[in-house]
Length: 169
Image (tube, rainbow, N blue to C red; front, side, top):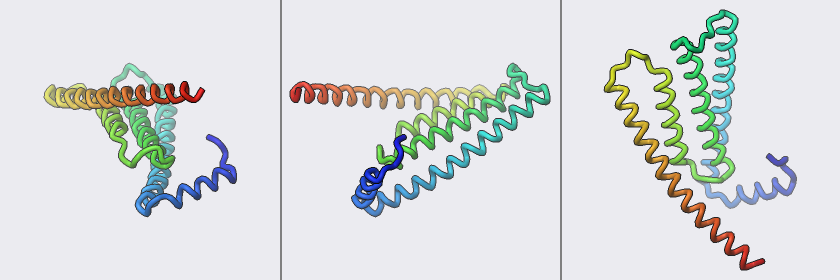
């Protein structure tokens, strides 16, 4: 990330003046959410570090033990989910997108279901597991379709840019 120079500050001020009232409101809320999620990430990371250190000193860190695996990787997945939320909000703050990033919401839902599978009790009834798997497949399919669409749009944009460069040069 580049340091802020007076030129960048002027650019930021100009961009701020060009925003509508609601876009300014959205920016302020995005900054606050970003700060709150950053605190949640730091607290979660601190708790994960404390839990792993406690397991190490107690000699109970047996990653093959299902309960230990569930606890540690459940916390890791929680951190990943929070970081993905933070990434989505950062895009809004940098004005690279709108407040709702559908692909990001789908990705976070996929991560949440993956976390659920990791912390799932082995005695869970099969219909519950089938329902989670169906949800995961549906979300994965939607995410894949959206990626296919975006990849095609990006390819067309890159081709148009290449043609424009050829015409200029």
